Structure formats: C-alpha cells, structure tokens
Length: 240
View 1: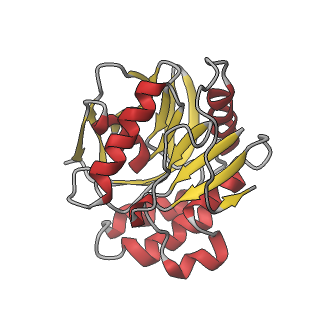
View 2: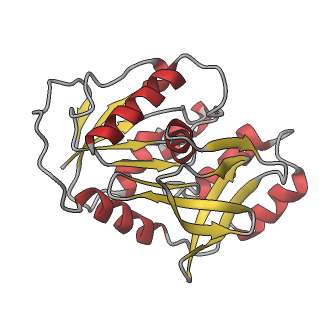
C-alpha cells in the first residue's frame, strides 16, 4: 500500500542528523507495517497532482498554526476536502489532526490553558495510551462528521475518527524522547514555560505506547474500502 506523506513543517535543522525529517520519523514508526511511501513537502508548495496518486495520505506535524496565513494552508485544506469526498483515507498527526478538522468544519485555536509537552496519558475509550506531545494549539470544536475517540484533561478532542475516511491524533507517536528533548532546546526556550519543560524532562524516560498507535494507524489505512477508480500517476521522490 502506497502512503503519501504530506509534510506540513520542517524539523529543527540541528536535530535532523540524529532524528531525521518528519517523513523519516513516520517511515520509522510504520517500518514493519508493509507500506511504501512518497513524500510531498506541501509546506513548500509541493503537492500531489491528484488525491488518488497514493492509496492514503499521512499529514505530519508543523510549527505553524492551522489558522495562520501561509500559502500552503488553503491549498492543503482544498486537498483534504477533495480526498475526503473521494474516500481516500487520511491520517493526521498534531498539525495534521488540526488542519483536517479545520478543513472539514471544526475549529482550531491557541489553547488558553497553555502547552502540553512530553509524555501524556490519553484515554482511548477506557484504555490508557501514553504518547509524547508538543502543542499549544488544539481542536476546540470537532467537525460534524467527527467522533471523539480519545480525550485528555488538557485536550477534549485528543483523537478523532471520521468513519473510514480519516483518523487523527493530537499527540506525536512518531516523536522519540531524544527528539522531544531536542525540541525543548531548539524551540522551547523562551516559548514554553521553564517549569513545564522541567516536568516534561522528568517524564521522558517513561515507557511510551507508540507501537499501539502505529498498529492502529496501519489498521485504519488497511481497512477494506471501495476500489480506487483512478490509477497512480507518476510522482517524484518515492521512497520505501
């Protein structure tokens, strides 16, 4: 199954050598799930030519806000709406979670309660799943078609499901502890309150449930759906 990774932001350059780019992190997270991947740096206005160019789409995190004025955001929202209408499955992570919600009628805001950083325990229908977080923005009103499937005291809509068309999560299953530590140094100082970062550092050695999320992402993409009617077009930057 061919998954197109829609890269909506760039990892801090000093961290790329150790942790890789955002697409690299998702290839690592899903390495044992039988997928192949193509990368599209939509943040740099590199878009697929058609929503059927891949079997599914994975939208990454970003330092940008979904509500900000960037050239790629309106075009990405249009792509999301077309993919949704055509039934091409999408998975969104953090910014991806937010931009899908915004494109489909939800609301994304800078949360007045502040930041969530480091390991957090999310309630997935009574099952506690621990994942790394790095966000201040969040979905404050879900779209009409969305069902909330995970919550957190800090984040009411921590994961959303849109039937068999989209599955989105606010947390970062692709972020390893060393990358979160690196974000604190490169992007956290002077932005995230120091006491909050100190608390997060103290939790970075806690075990994570990223493999559970990897399996759920894979199961969502692989769920039976109607056959695609449009063949794959020729694309650049294919990776396996």
